[in-house]
Length: 161
Image (cartoon, rainbow, N blue to C red; front, top):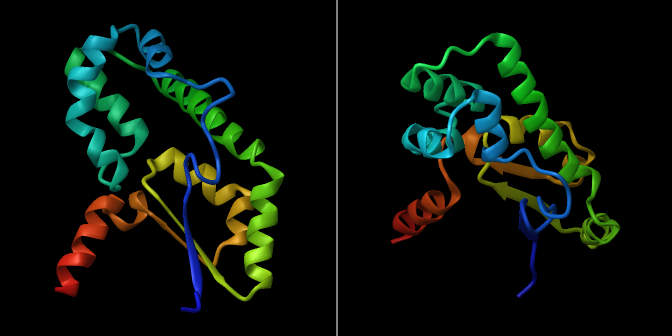
């Protein structure tokens, strides 16, 4: 069988969130002045929606604050988003050279290269601005297509039957 394409998942395949500072939920809680338990109650209500484009990261923060009765100003949201985006951008600053070489080798063999990822709004922004995007013929991101990829895979299997 001759292959025509290779599809990669993004996180922990092409890039990693490990090995550098992350903007964690604990840090988010400190910035909002809430406990992790308080945040989690309402975050869980919307967490799936953030990966399928129904709500942005900023909107989920505003939703949680509204539910908790926390007044949050625009400056705080901007600072939180800067921290979150910086964390995500750092992942793209540490792409292993071997990853770029592999992608170049696959392209040289005439293969199409695709990427899939379950991403939230700020992850999409950082990815689309990265040089990694230049290596792919097609990129499917859950936030943009409105479906997490496990659901997408299951839907394809159902349609194939």
